[in-house]
Length: 231
Image (cartoon, rainbow, N blue to C red; front, side, top):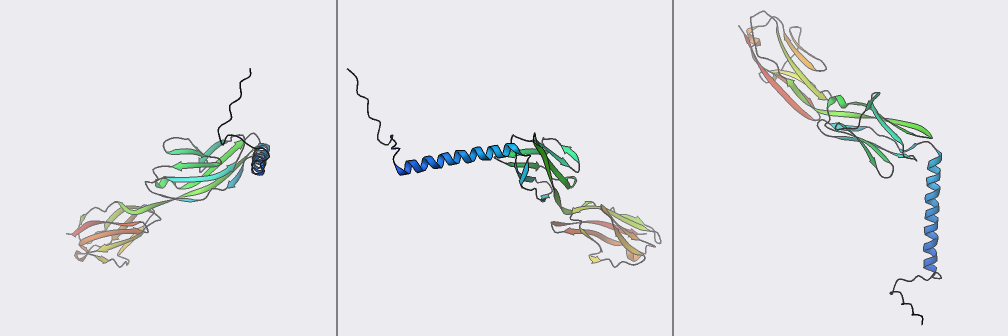
């Protein structure tokens, strides 16, 4: 005697004649065909950018991320370089791959030396493409080494030198006893990329006092002081 089959639990049957079921099946088939078509299309061509790299600003001590979107199948070979030199994946530079098509480079612990042009090169068996962008570094203005106090004889030349830094390059000023120094042929200062020098020719006793070098950019200010005594 044959045993009667148990009826399926409620909700576990599908009526293939139901219009909603038929519509869902059509959507699934179309989606599968579209997936196959996209996959086959990607297989036939070289890598291409869907979104190009863009310049980024890196604040000193922080991290920056350069990223782009790429269409490439099979999985491409990625190389990042800075100013023509290849960058190795490691603690400083981290290669990042985010689904499904984002390629990125993270630059950690930003310093002024990280400023430059970065290039990503993407290869697969069908070809190669590359793109570039720049990292722009921002560093607060700073007096990295202040001027030394000086004792000099009357009539001699006094030189005060300070090492400075900052990106964008800072504005620089010198003060004596809290007042801006008015430059002339005898008292003047020069500003270089990494330092500033105040020169006092034919020093007089009136030149004695407290001197200040002051630096400023849009990220911050700094200053340092030195004493000049004329004997």
